[in-house]
Image 1: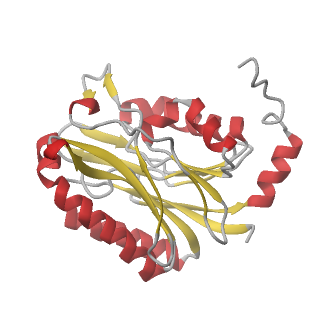
Image 2: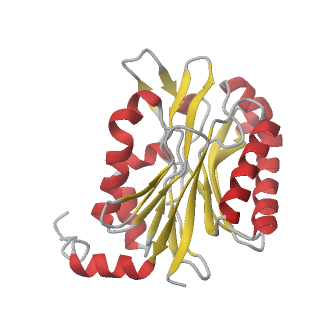
Length: 273
């Protein structure tokens, strides 16, 4: 297959996992009904709440998230990305932020633990210190040849600010870059779309970017605008600020055409940079 539909789901997850799972399934079903073959859920799709609650729930959540992804992929016959959920380590004192890509048959095709952690004091008064309770992944992000679709490279949210990660994914053969996120409302309004388009353009690859949107709790608010972007940098679909999904066709032959027309990947100078 060179042409298929991909869906970037947009959610407003809260501290209630069962409600979040139900909302995610609703969007997966709707995307499948519209013909999507590849569906991505955003970062923290099962839980957004305070750090202590996440740590307390992490053992249960890790099992429930994996089981949910397997069940949904089989039930709706889609390749499904769970864009990030907590996996406990250090006797539950910290977690990893793990994405899993699951095939239609329920087999786990790839796992990725988020490498870059969001430790930032924003001008709006919000402070984020992911490294206080989340451990950085230690393995390079994977690229997986999804049967019948294309070669997919994984990443999570803050990774989007590190272009070398995506250059690595493309060097490993990625044609589509998955960037599930819970991007803050403050940074998202200025940086989200331009960063996604830059990653697509400089790597001549599709970008599928599931997103969180709206107010989750207290002052925690996400930007929304889940997107599908083509290798030329054209935004094919934008989910806006409501829960839903952006859905658009992915054509691997289009990747090849753009890479022929704009052969920047071939013009790299690896001996210099």
